[in-house]
Amino acid sequence: MGARWEFPRFPLLVKSKFASIPTEVSLSMPHGTNSATTGPTTPATSGVKEQRVTKQRLAVSAALDELDDFVSTQELYRLLQNKGISVSLATAYRILQSLADDGLIDVLRNGEGEAVYRRCAVTGHHHHLLCRNCGKAVEVEAPAVETWAARTASEHGFTEVAHTVEIFGLCAECTAKKAAGKL
Image 1 (cartoon, rainbow, N blue to C red):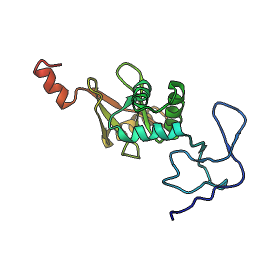
Image 2 (cartoon, rainbow, N blue to C red; image 1 turned 180 degrees about the vertical axis):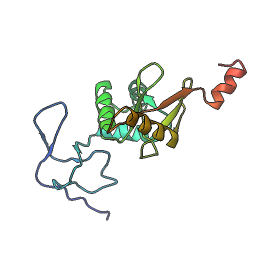
Image 3 (cartoon, rainbow, N blue to C red; image 1 turned 90 degrees about the vertical axis):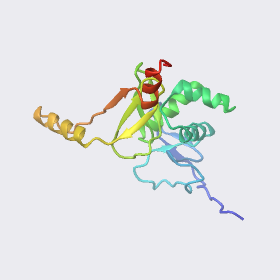
């Protein structure tokens, strides 16, 4: 017989950014985890934002795990619908924003200014090369950019700086298609 989870018999409080009053739920786990990877949470979980685990949240998270490139909310919604998974577009937006707010996925703006999301393999600070045509994304570390950003901020008296660098262009495959007149 497999391991048996014993869930707390008391309600846990979940702070929602959409309401000023904590919401009481019967089961919650740290955002970004699921029952397959962790045991039950307790109120002693320090500094971890609690999120209610729902079928929709798990479905969105699993879909992101299967994707290699950035995806818009609408694209993710269509993928879920095509698999027969019922998640409303509004719920997909909320879940993606929550995952991004918690640092569990990257979010950036594509060439058209639309927010796109991806679960990145790199957990630390990094940048992306993005193909304008096919959406291919490559994660890159750029120490020279980090040095430049720190120096520039310091020269102007700025502290506690953060930056985002996304480089858009055509990937090798799309460049070859363009050269062959197929793009």
